[in-house]
Length: 114
Image (tube, rainbow, N blue to C red; front, side):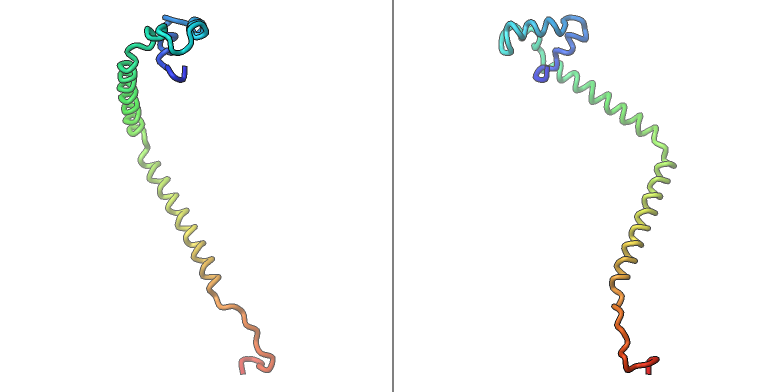
């Protein structure tokens, strides 16, 4: 199944069952001519499926873009900017606190800044 996902289509279309595929695999193994009937035109099928999938994904993406609330998005970006500003201010305060001069005790012989 992992090597040949095309077999899923046969089961979905009720042309084969998993039990029949297992029986064929059990009897003949992987590399026999039996599988040629089920794996023929694999390149064409994969190409068609990828075209449909890419068109579907692009259509879904366009629908998703249409459904975006731009006001909500702008508000969210504003909130993120405010949070970043607060973090920046906090980091500035931490740096400025560490750059303050250290406390030096007053000499014993000095009394009120004589």
